[in-house]
Length: 223
Image 1 (cartoon, rainbow, N blue to C red):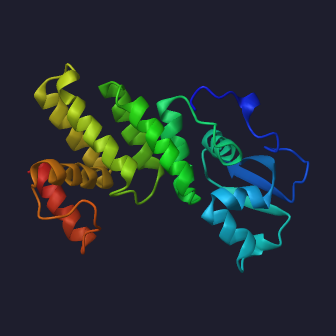
Image 2: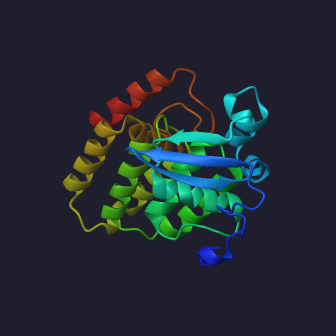
């Protein structure tokens, strides 16, 4: 899937032919418009389905206004929607597109991106992993206990022995990232629960009190 070229994308992508909606995507004051097709968008995105067929202004609007998404990753998501064979190639684009896919509830695309992430990110070095943590947790809101978050946490934990860094440097890196991104700290503990059973918590279930769980996580990491 990763070898698919842009020329192989569904020819309806950003094509005026049969278009029944315009998607105007704006970020930092810059806008780009796409010819959209409600049936195609709604087939892959619960957000678009609800917007077009629910009791929302988008249901009758000729132009749908979307804001704040990374424009590169938003376009990559549209390409994924229009062609299931399309997939971003770089690890940061896979993570960035996953962020946008999560926002627009593209569940099947998230699964595909997760498979791509597992293949690509496992080979990433320590510095690249740190950048991916910053990208994901800095751009995806309340991300604790997500599939890709747990994967990043476990991959960082498993790759520390190959990083070539001192133990103290690794610990300081984990602490610094955990302080900046509390949800990353949570996912580190979820991984720890799974591997070492450090807290009485089932990682496949949401904690009854998320705030108490995060406090426990912080105590374990920063103690």
